[in-house]
Image (cartoon, rainbow, N blue to C red; front, side, top):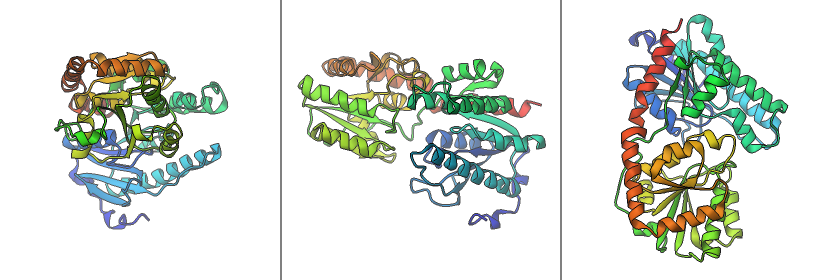
Length: 415
């Protein structure tokens, strides 16, 4: 039995209206570290839902059970898979079994009416299927297109056994869902066209920033590390995030264009962080690059981005990146910073006139776009204001709450 579960077995669901009890399943990140799921959890809580979350431990969130801001969180201990495919399969299977066991505990202790499953992976449909005969609703919150994520990492393996298996799991998830939550219009199209989901049951809930995280503060010259100009990057540092390409852009700026007055600050962590540090060292970029690691929300986090002259979204073109919304781009805009990015479909939708777009994958072009923007402070100020206005008007989290609640209304009304 999970520590602390025994004393929670008394059912407290009597205090929640039937249909208002939600179980959210997450495998990718712990809560409240997963910002999107945490925002969803708090929005549902504010709407009167009783919210319970099952997720892994990690990032200093090591308690097996706790209640944070009225949201119950059950966590399980996981492990890092090795590089072999069999290790990944073992990790997913282990996490799936731990999630299933905890789902039964939550059913006994608190009850639930809706299972809200966040991917990756696309395997939680099999858990929802066990509870469907008892009237439980299933909402699929699609954070990633897993088949495209696979092709992003292995572009030559389209149609192989693993790719076909991922497409099968995605189809099963779509088919079982009472409602589908998509992060943007492209993902909605996949649900309708590839998944065959009724368009009336697909809701776009964008991952917009909230005011607690994105707020304006006074710039701090110390963040520039003595340079005249500063570039900033925020986000995960994985294989598909393009941070290696951003280091090559910085090398073009320093060596080819002679811009030793530009410092690059990289905020975040991920599986490639150590190799990226080694890459920067090997390229002789250490005087011009700073890796901060993960920076908690707060004054320092805000100061970094409010001190930047330009923020960069270096996500390279690919099957997943072309159709995915990059949260960092919208957060840059929330800080009132101009953005340089590659011309990818959903990035261009998010950035609008607050960004300028380089030819996808052309690192020299991105470097030239950065230099042009640094030379035009009036344009930077105008772009920053346009971005902040657009976030406030359309893209902040508060605009995502109504479609989230409509997805729940749809799922609960479905027979």
